[in-house]
Image (cartoon, rainbow, N blue to C red):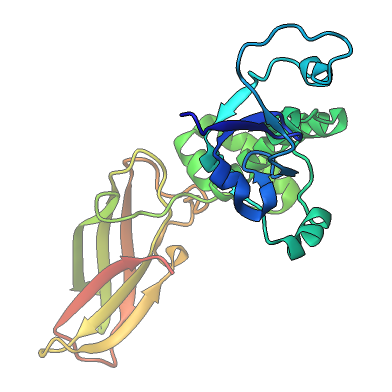
Length: 275
C-alpha cells in the first residue's frame, strides 16, 4: 500500500510495517512488541526500496552503514502504542531489561554436575539396595527359612548375633493343617477321667508351627460347661522339637487326659488356633 511505512526498533532491529495514522498516535512514541523497547517510530523510519551506494559525504551514509534493513519484518499489530506523554519518563525508567536472545533458553542447558555429588550417589544407591534387601530378609526370615532350607543355618547364626529367632510358619487355613480325626472317651481305669485323642495332618510343603488347641465340654443344650486351652507342650510328645514345627506333610498324634469328674457333659468341641 502506498501509505505504508517501515520503522526499525533500535533495540532488536526488528522492522515493522506501519501507517501514518499509527505514527500520529502518542507523537510517534511506540513500544516494540518483541523486546519492549520504547522508541520514536518517526525517527527510526527506514526505506526498503533498492538504493545505490551513497557517496561518503552523503547524509544517508550512516543509514547505509547500518546494513540492509532485511533482518525481520513484522506486522504493525506487533507494535504497541506508547503510554501518554506524562507517563513516558516513568516508563523509560521502569522499562524491562533488554532481552538477551542468546540466553533465552538458558534454563534448558544442562548444568555441570559436581563430582563429589556423583560419587556420593554412586555409593549411596548400592548401600540403600543392600539395606532394603537386609530389611526384607530380617522381617521375612521365617518365610525364607521355610521355603529355602539351605539358607536356614545362616539365618540362625545371624539371628544369634542380633538376638532374633526363627520359627516355623503358621498354617493359614485347613489347606495347610487340619484334623483328620478326633475322639473323646472315658478312661475305663479311672472314673471321671476322659481321654481326648486327635490326629493332625500337615498338607504344606514346609514345616508348620504347632498350634494351640481349644477344648470345650458341652451339655445337652450344646452350651459350654468347661473350656481348656492346650499349648503345644500340653499335647506334643516330649521328644518332639517344638521349634522345628510339624514337618512338611507330617502327622501329629494328640492324646490328652481330661479330669471331668466335677462336670456333666454330653459332647465336646476341639479347635486349633494361634495366639
